Image 1 (spheres, rainbow, N blue to C red):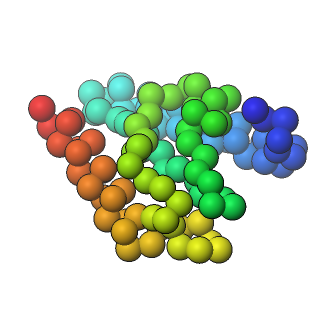
Image 2 (image 1 turned 135 degrees about the vertical axis):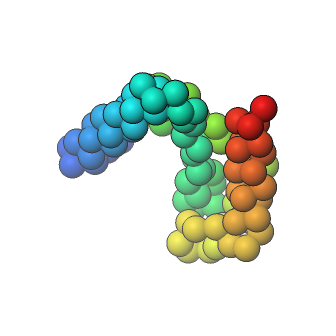
Length: 101
């Protein structure tokens, strides 16, 4: 829940939500399919998914891969390693192909 964040982080999240809502509305108004693809956060060798940030993501339809694990991230920086990049790229390819139907 949002009580884990300081005030600056909360303010920033409000801006993010507003901007993403603007993007979704712009797409909807122009007949463009829009989906938010979430990247699970990895800290302390544990993944945090969008569902763990329900206050933020409750405003959006989103997709998120379920095949990632902490070994798909570089140690000490939370970014994907080569395997993680490949898995996420494969995931995005499936999402995009799903929109083409």
